[in-house]
Length: 198
Ligand SMILES: CC(C)(COP(=O)(O)OP(=O)(O)OC[C@H]1O[C@@H](n2cnc3c(N)ncnc32)[C@H](O)[C@@H]1OP(=O)(O)O)[C@@H](O)C(=O)NCCC(=O)NCCS
Image (cartoon, rainbow, N blue to C red):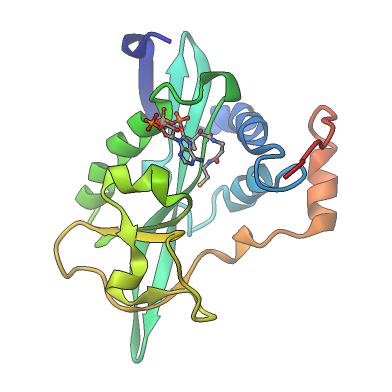
């Protein structure tokens, strides 16, 4: 892939169908049989917890090959709550993975999130990938999931030292999908066999 031909631009509603197809392609059978990430994004369209200014697509020769999706999260602590940004799902077409598309989308949007005034970004994912972008254990900030769980998979990056509060992290409830809703949503896509094997 020629990196010079890759452009990043904000996602627009006319992209939504193509993007949801791309998300499904990227996540299919990666973490479980099939995937639900395309439904999560679909459910969060036009939702106040979505941050449309930060949702970008990567375009190569007129085709959308990557997408990054941001939502607002709440860090709740005794007596209050702080809003932070979160990204995910982030998706790259399987045939174009590991060629810098994901990195380009992350590096482009983090400074935009800072300029929007967010104190930082909190994510879940593989630390081997995300530490290179400045993420580290969210536990260093005292940020844990509502059930108290934490681990290297829960990461944070603050834009100003000390900007992130300690507390329990709440992602948008739409991240928990319903199997009946997923089965219905799947009928809008071409059939795909599930071959998850690990
Ligand atoms: C994860 C994803 C967005 C990364 O985008 P990408 O364009 O493939 O990655 P980049 O080219 O920017 O970076 C490549 C590097 O990241 C590593 N990498 C990519 N995906 C990784 C992952 N899921 N876990 C760990 N490392 C990963 C590659 O091994 C490579 O490492 P190297 O630079 O040391 O060789 C993309 O691979 C994807 O869509 N994967 C399927 C969906 C997914 O898992 N999304 C993230 C959920 S947290």
